[in-house]
Length: 411
Image 1 (tube, one colour):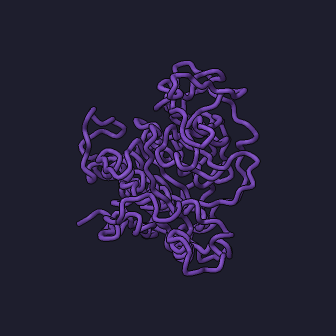
Image 2: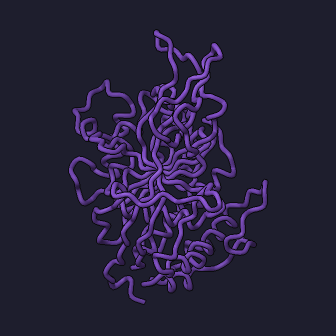
Image 3: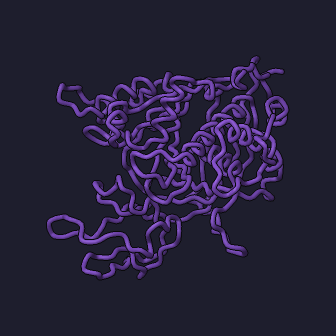
């Protein structure tokens, strides 16, 4: 019998939940990294993930806040950590009720195949998405684009979920993705009305051609719940760098436009590097395990677990940098070899960022150090973005308090 088919006892604390379901380690000790070049089966990966998440992280959660550390990918021994900044403080309310309506969406871009094939698999067999207090809904976001193995049919679906577009009058000539965005808004939202029937959380799955590893995209530092979820994923996968990108630039008044914005809350997962139209088993398995861990975290929250305050290193989007171009708008150069694949690494003023076809180097002319991400992302050529500039911050995230017990949570 599949482990998700068993009725697990409702638990009020992380310890009780771990005792109830902390079984099996997939043949590895908790926290033991995979051997180089290996790709575990989904069953072994999920079993090991469950044990490490529910048992290994209890010690971290039960430590005093002052003694806990979030794994820092690429940190040098003795390196000085950035201090928390007021700009990174979180303050908005967190969910006051259990999460019951959760969606996992894949194929928002039809040629990002990890999410496409996970969504198709879960639509046939959703048992992996079941938890004692809720069952997540799998959604193939753009079936037409997925069938054609294209990013989109008429326009980028993940830039179409603005209030203005969603409430505009429908016409027969509307782009395919605008029609689909309205359908998804009715399924997962609606966004514009602020309706209580909107989904509690949407986890949107993406791939990138850039050397981004595992990147968790959160709208801003105000999203306390998503930041706690991100920290859980970092703790679970210490052997795999897991960075957090705050997507909204500072002082930005732009309207949110991504699929996960139609729900009450949401987050995007970006995994790479993976070419468009290609499946990689290692990235597919990692995405599958990340989703399972995210759902486990939501179950812990629903069962009344409390999560203490912590500090977290994040990258905040400052805007895009375009390629050098001719007067006609054509490319005049490419990403410099010294910058290629160095996502999240510091870029100093005066460092080369592009190499023109003539052989001339183009230097970064900013007045401060930035941290490029999505370097040479294939999908961003049409958006005139060679990479995104980010700043690295240390933010203070407040505690996530436990929910009030309900009859279903009593042992």
